[in-house]
Length: 553
Image (cartoon, rainbow, N blue to C red; front, side):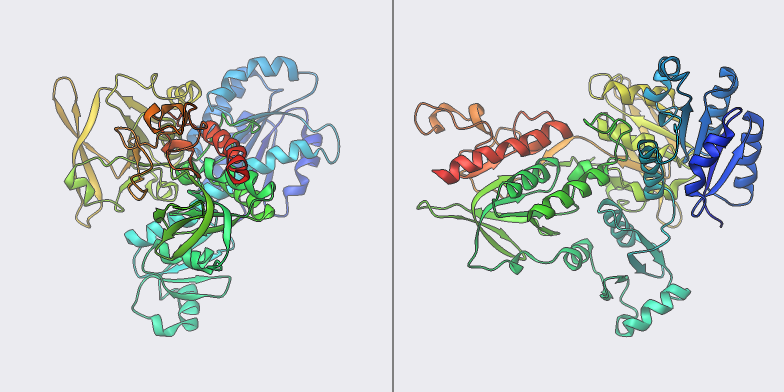
């Protein structure tokens, strides 16, 4: 397979766009064509010869009907490619009005002003972001930071791949008899027969029994921290709230440790594209956002330990310090932020629980979506995460069905996602419906589902190779001491939500303070939270002032 292609369709600005995209010719096959017909023919030629198309660049100077046919045709021919409209400065204001809905609905990924000369880095920043996201979600990695060697791509191999995708680490799976497999096994022959074997560019190689073992190799153990050191803040959970707290606390001089049970970013890290987060007009994937935040926190001195869920907290009894417990060691700290977020609720259908990892997934499982090209996929859930998962899956699957118990998505999903779903011809929404059964094919992979109308009880069997379950919030905070008060659903109570009889005097606790002094809560785990990335980030940032005040006392 040759280099991925960038196809540029322009009738009147070939010189300007050809010069602008010359910088990409070293790593991409840049094709310059003059009209809609040539663009379609070029795309067919590339696909027919086994090439991938990463980006379509469409000049708005063409006939509008032909331009819309071209945009729709590229979506049908290469759904995984990104689409960019460029407009000359003389048309920019009018084109902004004309194509506003197309951008909002996801018909195109961006509308940009054509480069006005050399080194228009604002233009190339946008192009780079589009290519970056394409490479992260579609392209096979050229350099694999981690290699997984196994005779078959089983459930564990898929879990490892999904974890590596969530932490932004390029990886590949290889058979032991392949050239790569043999080279890796020469490094650790004693592991032969204990699959999977994992090899890293960092130099380690060995059998990997689970995701936690991989995370430990990448990020270390909490007992690496000197047992005599008492840090200022331990952040439990590296979702948006925990990452924001880590950045702001460490930037203000607080010694900060962040513990994450799974992957940096939490549930938000599985989002294929967040389009309504402040400051990212073209959107950003949850993984990218999380890794950038982690990089910021590391720069200021936060220490991260991933793969180690907190198992308990021993609160201080005499004004001393708390102890946060994990299976990998204890961390002594003066204050704690609980930002563990929530887990997806289980579907509760036994026949489908047995197929988890073999076509059935809790969460978006972006790496798994690539394997479902040409298949039918079902998404269960009506929140933003479900909408983002459906749009991502539709780049690969032949068809996607969103199943929700409510009549439609309007009460639970952001308007911009609903618009994008309504426009996408590959996505169907089935309201007042639930999944009640399913079963495998001859090799044990999901093959079919039974869906039921919640009103009439009428059932229908449908073929499906993928089922992604994003069923809403289930708090995971049973590890907290009983002294940290929760509401009837298990979410942590903070601030004025705490009953007055648990206040210390006549004044309620601070907004993010719990019933235990020095223990705070933020993000989705907090009772009454908005369950949005931006609000969780705000809570993580704002809790730092409360931590400062507590430490000062």
